[in-house]
Image 1: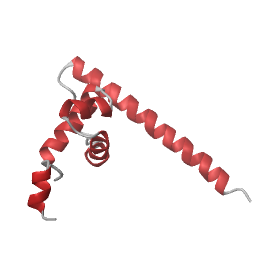
Image 2 (image 1 turned 90 degrees about the horizontal axis):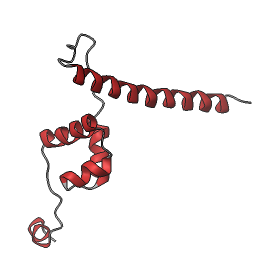
Image 3 (image 1 turned 30 degrees about the horizontal axis):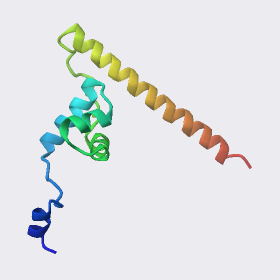
Image 4 (image 1 turned 180 degrees about the horizontal axis):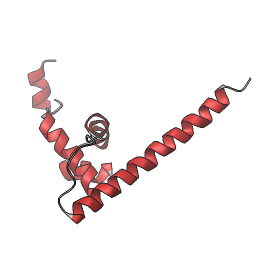
Length: 105
C-alpha cells in the first residue's frame, strides 16, 4: 500500500511543525488545563499531546531570565514552579524509598 492510498483512505498521520507542537505545549502549561482538554481543543489524540509535553515541556529558564512583567504573569510562574517542585519532590521521595529497598540485604 502506497502513501497516496493511505492519504485517500484517511489513514496517513498528519505532520505537525515544531512551532505548532511547542504552541500546544505552551498552551497546556500556561492554561493549567488537562492534557485531554487541550487535545480536544486542538483536535489531537491525548497521547500525542502527552508525548509533546514530555518532549517540549518543562524547559528550564536560565537563572538570569527576566522577571515576569506583570503581577499576573508572576503569579502564573509561581504556580507553575510550585507544581514542578511538587512533582520533583515526589520523584525524589520515590527514588529514596527505592534505594532503601534495593540496598537491604
